[in-house]
Image (tube, rainbow, N blue to C red):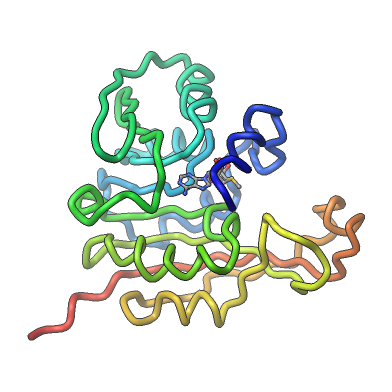
Length: 223
Ligand SMILES: C[S@@+](CC[C@H](N)C(=O)[O-])C[C@H]1O[C@@H](n2cnc3c(N)ncnc32)[C@H](O)[C@@H]1O
């Protein structure tokens, strides 16, 4: 999606993806992912997700990246936090307590910046991207995370011809093809959610599932 698409969504308040609650799959599976206590968690395409505050409350440091200044500033405002700001080649960094959000393009983040992230949480990020961006997102951005990194990835599955994204359906085969060179990928849960998502049914979607994956970055091959 072009950045302007997202800027417009935020400007017009068309942010149906934003949840006023913690992602249930995060609460259910985070402990099982095995992220080290106190580790820094990368949250790509972060929006103003409450999940970041939940991770920080669990003792993690959080590094989010988000294109929209409205989302970034909204996050801190809604949590009663006054962030410090600084600029770098990645964008504008807003930081308060254990949460740092970069207002910038996720694809511009490099391995130097991500080296300190021993965990990643991806909800409505991979599935927000069309296929031509998902390939570099998994193959290049995820590849910049360090060896040993643990992650929780949440996707959606539905018959692709039944609705236009975003959110886009991402099949298990695509997740595995995109990540398995560098990551161990395990399905933790696949759950049918069509009855809880009437908007999808109204658009003609006949089957809808959410899938939670545990990720573990493999050591770099020797030699
Ligand atoms: C579907 S929303 C999900 C937000 C968040 N993960 C959540 O669970 O609420 C996708 C977000 O990614 C942001 N975004 C899209 N492309 C991006 C990029 N290349 N770099 C950083 N943020 C991006 C959009 O502005 C939008 O807020």
